[in-house]
Amino acid sequence: MEADIKAAGFTDIQPTHFAAFSFPPPDGLRPSQLAHRIRMSRQATNHIIGQLEALGYLERRAPEEGARRRIYVTKRAWNVAKVIHATMLQIQAEWAAEIGPERFRDFMATLRAFAARGHEVG
Image (cartoon, rainbow, N blue to C red; front, side, top):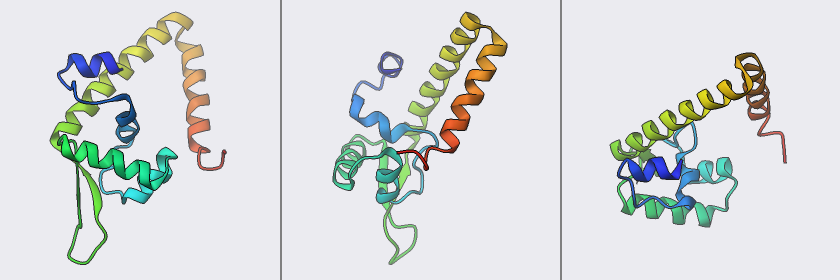
C-alpha cells in the first residue's frame, strides 16, 4: 500500500497517517469521532490531523457559525483514497486467484462480519 501511494506521487504521507485514510474517509467527522474510530487518543489524532492539514490532505472547519469544527477531506486526499482502493482491489484479486473465488467470498464475508461487530470488540 505504502509503495503504491508513494509511486502515485504522494511521497509526504507517513505510515502514521494511514489511519486517517481508513474507510469510510473521515469527511465531516469531528476529530473526537475519528480518534474513537481509529482507536487513538484525541491528542495523537489531533497531531495527525494537523500534519495532514499542513500537507493539504485534510482541513478543519465549522460547517456553520458556532458549530464545532469538523474534518473535511480535500481533493488531494480523495486522490490518495483512489490509489488505496485500486491497491485493495489488486490485492483482493491476487488472494482470490490464490485460494479460489468461493473460499475468497467466504473469507470476505467473515471479515465483513468482524468489521460489523468492530464496535463491540475490545
